[in-house]
Amino acid sequence: MLRDRIRGPLAAAAAVVAAAVVGGAQSPSPAPGWLDAYREPASRLVGAALADTAAWTRVAELTDTFGHRLAGSKGLEDAITWALAEMRQDGLENVRGEKVLVPHWVRGRETAEMVAPARHSLVMLGLGNSVGTPPAGIEAEAVVVRSFDELDARGAALKGKIVVYNVPWTGYGETVRYRSAGASRAAAYGAVGMLLRSVGQPGLRTPHTGALTYAPDQPRIPAAAIASEDADRLQRIQNRGETIVVRLMMEARMLPDAESANVIGEIVGRERPEEVVVLGCHLDSWDVGTGATDDGGGCIASWEAVRLMKKLGLRPRRTVRAVLFTNEENGLRGGLGYRDAHLAELANHVLMIETDGGVFRPLGFGFSGNDQARATVKAVASLLAGLGATRIGPSGGGADIGPSVQAGKVPSMSLDVDASLYFTIHHTPADTVDKIEPTDIARCVAALAVMGYVVADLPTRLGQ
Ligand SMILES: [Zn+2]
Picture 1 (cartoon, rainbow, N blue to C red):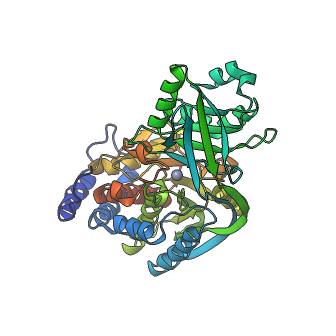
Picture 2 (tube, helix red, strand yellow):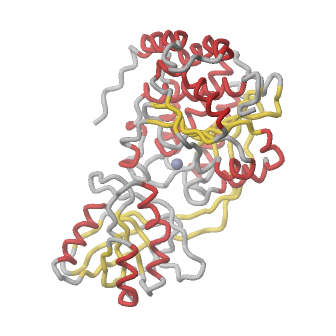
Picture 3 (cartoon, rainbow, N blue to C red):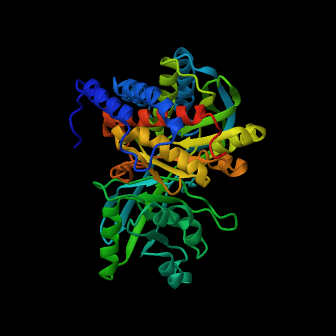
């Protein structure tokens, strides 16, 4: 499906892009004088990022070796040990794991099957944090609804039923609330189980997992995602007036919290080491696929950006810190743990950048901060004209950096990429490294390295 990987011309492409960076003529408004000092280091960073396939190779090594990295798994802990050792080998400074306790949810075996009006298996994935069923499973009449309004309209008639939410994909924000809250909303009417049309762009009968959150005042019922094709089929059968019976079996269970760690590596600032620019991502993933796009690629790109600064001898005025947060997917404990461990230091966080939207072709950054800071990062982004990544969107941030950004009122940024494939593979068995182009992730590394380095080196602190 994706183009063949062309490694040879990367170096030539790097030369062209690096030349465009030095030229820097694409900026519509006159470039501020301070920017000139950064054209040379920016072009070196871009050139180094595009010179080889180091980033892609490292994502492949991470995901091939350790596989999925769900919180509490051996894969995640082994990946953390590996990342710490590799960062030290790269020459990053103050490399350390900062302890965090993470939830330990285990999927176990699981099946879903329509048993009436005919017997057909459903392609499913249990939702993260779901409870399991009794060992024999549950069997109940299924009722398909298209919205919470329809759920509420059926109300008490849902007692003892399995509710099937068949909500078409209209974007993540609008649709994900059915995954998060749907089980408890159905349980409030006495439902005994919940199935959900997968939250994502329709694929090839692909189920998408993801976390649910139980309301504290409702019974916890087992919940799973099914492929959109299966949800549509159940809908058609119901529309024909037939009664559907579904059997659901899930061994899912929550174990006691497990010990994990946020992985940190730095280049210590040469003038104001206490002031920090964070490049963040999350190292954990769902337990299907190998978490290459969500978010192994984001972690490797953030880490590579810092490694390149070190390799090129670029030590900025302020500290640049790569943070590979543990446990975003089903608990956000990495981001919460970082906030708590660094509370006193958050006022010295100059900027936090999150890369968790995939490492496809970069377009620029989303940014949240004051107008002065926005003008500055716009000027910095003009150095990325050769990459086509100059766009600064109206808001930026991310789940992992969110708690710190909120607590410390830290300016925040997210790498923006061409996301056309993202929600097709998001939280599915198809999230593997072959969906990532080496040139795309190399460009992401270049964009992150230039933005991170320049903001960390600015003569005046960002936004002041
Ligand atoms: Zn993610």
